[in-house]
Each structure stands twice: as structure tokens, then as C-alpha cells.
Length: 120
Image (cartoon, rainbow, N blue to C red; front, side, top):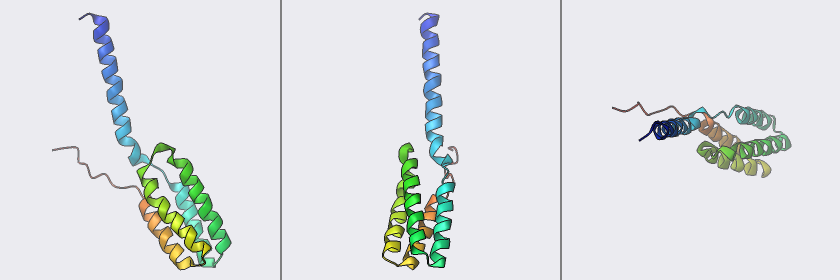
């Protein structure tokens, strides 16, 4: 085996290893702070009894989370149904149920702690 083939083999192996490390670490670093802020504002609107403001903020949160879905986030797929249910409950006038759905969505947005300890 000549040095050119050996160099190509090592460089390909290096790039493949770097890609795997980045892909494995990407979901842990998700930032939903903008959606969390909108959810906090939704709760304020619900406490004030402002149904129209609640629905507008819910729509904005859903549009923002849809834009963030381009990264194929599993966390977004977990909390978006809660936001849709909150918007539906807000449209029907049941702001108490809508607040419950928003609180559930906020819990799902918080970063999960890593349970992997690095092996044995």
C-alpha cells in the first residue's frame, strides 16, 4: 500500500469519526428559549382572560416550532401536539385546559439530562 492510499484512508476515517460525534451530540444542545418565552406570554394572556391574545401567541409558537423542525428534532414532535391542543382549547374558550396543555409542553421543552455514563 503506498502512502497516498494510506493518507486517504486516514483522512476519510477522521472525517467519518467527526461526523458521528457531531450527530450524536446535536440533540442535547437544542434551544427552545424563544418558544418557552412565547409559552410564558401565553400563560400571562390566559391569566388576564385575553383569548385572542392567547390564540395569536399560540399560533406564533406553533409557527416558530415548525420552522425549528428542519433539524428533525424529536423533542419538537413531543411538545407541538400539546401546543396545538392548547390553541384548540383556547379557541373553544376553555383557557384553564389550555393553561394545562401549555404547562405540559413547557415540561417537554426542558433539556433532558444525559443518562449515558460513558460506558462501563
